[in-house]
Image (tube, rainbow, N blue to C red; front, side, top):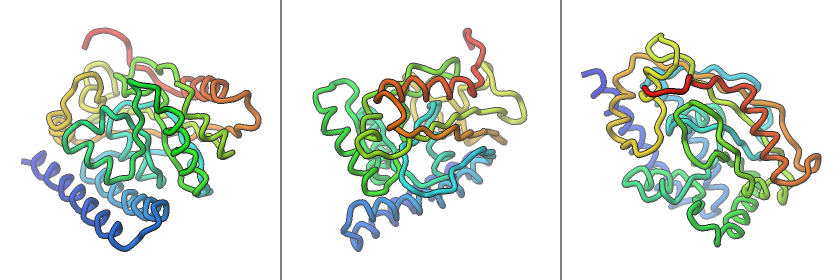
Length: 258
């Protein structure tokens, strides 16, 4: 019964966001101003959503400045976006595969996500250009450079192409590290990670239902030393150094079969 109540409240917040997003779109014509307004609404509703899900967030080093920057970090779940959005306003870069998932794809579009086609690199230049324009318009953007969500066993290689947008726009790159620490009071590990981690071919709605059945989730977000593109040797160097800094702070799950 408690899980049903939680999931009902979550969908109420989702439809509230969709309604507000639609109304804002009727009155605000400037695309980037609209995205900033939607981002502020999204932040407020995500904070409410985390309270519903009983997710407690501890943060370290959150930037005080609201100036645009490219946020980059590890990716474990769709829950990451609620956690990060509750801390700062941002647009997100996600894949066309997510866009193709019923309902979740529509929600990402309404939230102003920037979509990239990871299966075909022919349109990469245009995608980088769109990302650069958003940054130049003072809109922060969050990228998960692993290009997929993981099961928490390791940090995958950070892919470098989208870092080019930060170089072109001359905005800082802000690495962050997400660590889920406890689930229902027990340390996060192989035995319970799948209540939070969303990866592989997991279905969205059954996973959300399982998440709603939990009593509590504790997560920590650490914002690491900011990186200024002019001090690095291009996108590949930025990707390598930011991956190393995130890996240093990441607490991996012990490898093996759950």
